Amino acid sequence: MKSPRDFFKPLAAGAPEPLREIPVRPSRVIHFFPPHVEKLVAKLPELVPTTDILLGTLEDGIPMAEKQAARTSLVKIGKSVDFGSTQFWTRINSLDSPWALDDVTTLVTEIGDKLDVVMVPKVEGAEDIHYIDRLLAQLEARVGLKKPLQLHAILETARGVTNVEAICAASPRMQGLSLGPADLAADRQMKTTRVGGGHPDYIVRADPQEGVAERATYQQDLWHYTLARMVDACVTYGILPFYGPFGDIKDTVGCEDQFRNAYMLGCVGAWSLHPTQIDIAKRVFSPRPADVKQAQRVIDAMGDGTGAIMLDGKMEDDASARQCEVVVSLARQLAARDPELAAAYGFSK
Ligand code: GLV
Ligand code: MG
Image (cartoon, rainbow, N blue to C red; front, side, top):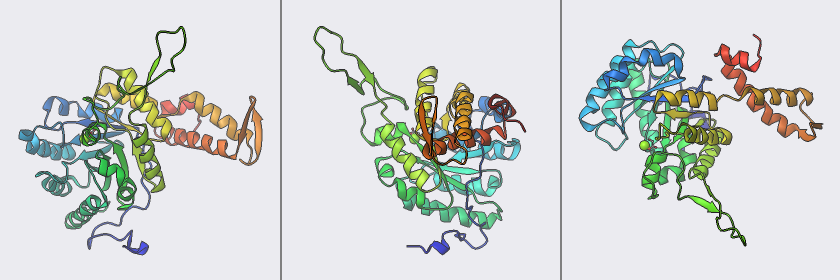
């Protein structure tokens, strides 16, 4: 076991000091792109200002024959594209693949100063984070990086879910977790064939009623348990929880519902697999202006934030004021970087 005093010491001589806090930056949407597809790469400069995070993926979705080309292209992108205030992330291949080591070595050496976060898929336990943590420190020291790279793990195996707290606590580099419903479904032997979202076979049915032939059924959220568990683990360790992919690009309503469930449960953002999902995620993960207004009303009415009051016939107290603070402070964080949102919330500079 490590002494708490050593937790924030660099893991290699000359590596930058680990961050103590995750930098506050809008993180409502992680837009994925395949770096080997030239047509999509050409559109990156247009996409940059529309998304909070742009992620070049090297893992699933990139054919084996293109793995090298995708990595090489990502290096080129990192060196040539101006990301402005948009975060630049990558998803490397899984640690048990033949590509992961070269992914990390090449990317940190070539564009380590451009990358904000390295997303690691199929993380199963703290040992995976320890491995990459040390490797990153060695490479950072060799290249002379001033800012440590952060780590984001995808929760997409049963063992990963079982070890979720240990994964969050494994390193001060940990920035967040994403739920990976597609791989998680496969690993758990769930009987689904889709990427995220609900399923018509996962339902509850209304009780039988005399004279009523049709019993209503309601689809349930397949991901509720894992999301809730992930959010608790992330918050406990001060890192950020995200919902992952929603594969049915045309089902914008289903996507919005899935994202909103994650938002309501405490997630800060979700993945986007198509530009249409960028707008959905940004809308869902920004508090609604009416909710911000109501939250501010409660805070104002609560005065010093203690005690209990009646507002519109409802009891509000310290705990509801604290909930309202969550909504208003997220709105303020987002509005600080988005004048349109600031206007919608009625925040004056
Ligand atoms: C994402 O990587 C997933 O498997 O859902
Ligand atoms: Mg996956």
